Image 1: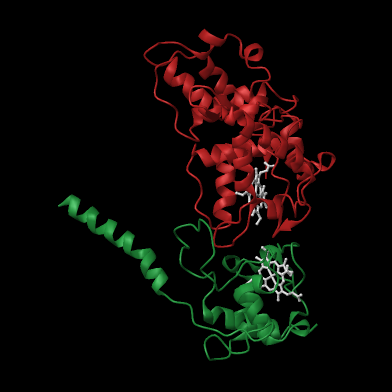
Image 2: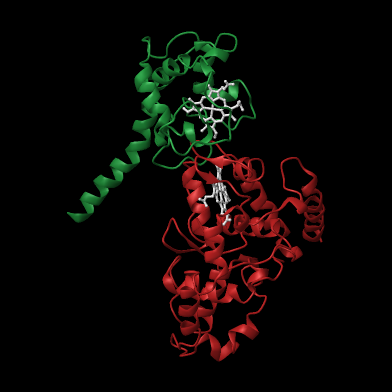
Length: 259
Length: 148
């Protein structure tokens, strides 16, 4: 009862949020794609030139590979990825009833590894985890992001938002200082962008490789000389969830290319 | 044997932040909207200051631009540093660098000579100011030369 009331209040607060100073109005929202050079856009748009598609291909093989003590593949349970996984990534991070907390797509894959394949979870940023999440995210390309709609997630969204607003690190900057208030500007040579998580996992030119949203967030935390959250830490997932709910309705473009 | 080595390493690691904190900030006095006296008691070196402003590790030109034809990437989050020495006195420039939040509590400009009131600072930087007192004085000396 108490809990339900608290969630209702949080949901009300959430509804009031877009009115607060500094946050980006719905019509002003822009994907990181729109800040990129014509060359980088072309690389993302052309499936034969987008390096992230190699990771998707890798994921297709893994999808059909039997693993773990259970000797099952993803497709043994889920069937064709383009049918069963359509629209799934657009809902993640999602509420996990067993833990009562949000899990992101990578964590969801690892839950299946552990529970249904009886295999060791993949390490964060491993080739396999990036490949499977890239494959699954691709099945939501063009679909609107709906993560955060589940009312059970309201407290986590609010927590993630508080983290986004909090100044941190030796440079004492909050995510919002750059990504809400200065997204039309440049930090040295880089366009600041709005931090919309529309394309993850991505192929990043600077990394010369694939990376998750968590890796990207750790980069910004280290940039302001803060202690980066550990991979999969509850604060990390809450921050991912807030970003995704902030991008509500924007189209999934994974696997994207970023500079 | 192995264990004692790792214990010694653990002790050193534990001792490090304390050592960093022990590297105390030099005291300074704010008068009006500035800090009139040099943090080191010495004037800074403007040539060294220019090199520091351009150095990535100082972070200035991440946000600012200025009369730096050789720097390819300059930020536009903040006003140009051109003319900074004309718009502000040396005392004002010094406070601006030491703790810009004393001038504008909402500013995004970091406080370069402050270690308190910060959250979740990474271990490599904890307990240390972004710049040393000497570096601040060198940059102040350089900014004061930017008259137009």
